[in-house]
Image (cartoon, rainbow, N blue to C red; front, side):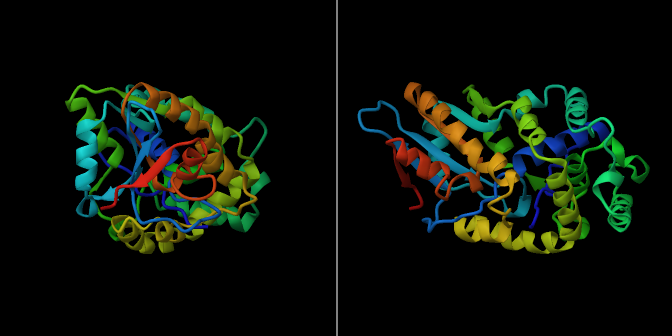
Length: 313
């Protein structure tokens, strides 16, 4: 299992604000490349969504949540779509969530705290625990002496916010923030498909056992992940969803993490997209991993009677 949550924004915030933003981007970032079944998919990040007799045409765009600035690009077609749509729809409204970064940090920390009476010694062997502590010591985000303050999932995201040192670009950017600025500059509304509470609730449903497995896998694959990032970005720039998903890694199809963070959310989003697109023309911009596959947004919207057409031309 490969993890690419370590590619976070690095603006000038206090430590707690940086932790809050890092974990927030980790929440949405977890979902963009995790899928267990990939069907043959046309190479495209941007899709038109239309329905017979509908007054409005809407669009679906697959993002990569964090990307090195020197690899960032904007499709000409996307710029045209931005100009003619009425509303931006993201997984979560980042401006709203980051209105109070310190309060956000506290809410995330409280939501991801270890259950009463549970300790890392209950989840890991002595050698695994030493492995975790050694990895934690390499970062400045948390203390190896206070691991029981954090659930394994929160610890994973906080540690990965430290990045890949010299193997990652020192400067990164975000499609969500780029799109947010474009729509705000033109005084057009932005809607989130989920709230922070929604996303925190998804993680609360993941067992500590699976969180522990995720943490160990994240630590053990970090160097490989950093080496693979350039390949993943290249696949994104080619709009190659199949290669993108293959490079980004998979969770087992039996894992509740895969269904909670990807498939179940797609199913919940489709009615919201249908409702919003009835009223006006919208651009739905979500992690690229939500687009393909039998439970992806493209397939589910087609099943709901929409014509979903690639705009990669």
